[in-house]
Length: 106
Length: 118
Image 1: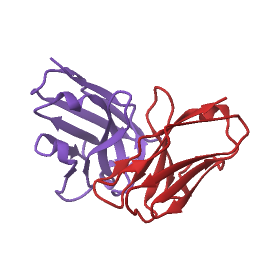
Image 2: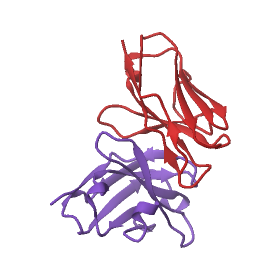
Image 3: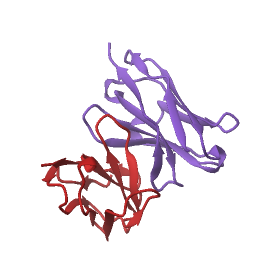
């Protein structure tokens, strides 16, 4: 299976820019997608195919990358962005998710 | 507004069965793939099974093949997951998701907890 590796946690101050990384154990082309999960809630779809914003997602969120290295950027970060962010690939079977990056605000 | 509402979770002994349901609304259910994704307590997300909108194919992760069965009733806009021979490692919150043609999961239900324990 394709392993997606994410940093466990990040802490930033409101108004700053944050980049959350996701590294794949093998190439996934641009077929990387991102989700946000707030405490006690279901995941919410954010970005598809590396860089495309899902409907209704604020333009503060953006994505980039291809192959094995991908980044989710939030600029500027707001207090409401406290959550765990997961990446997910569908280029290789089975579809897999990263372990998640917990974003905390200082 | 897309809504996915799961039901049927609970506490079950190892080796027993449980059937989850997911009532969908707010979109044309028969036009979409659907899937189940699970999340063990304090763990990450794991795709479990998917079913296309047409045809008889279904897809499963290896650890549930032969034990779980995904199905759908388009007339009732309902997705199901029949779980047999349950194991402790199946303990998780199970999310019903709309599956965008096998690419990503664009809508999620609130989740239903399944606990497998004696």
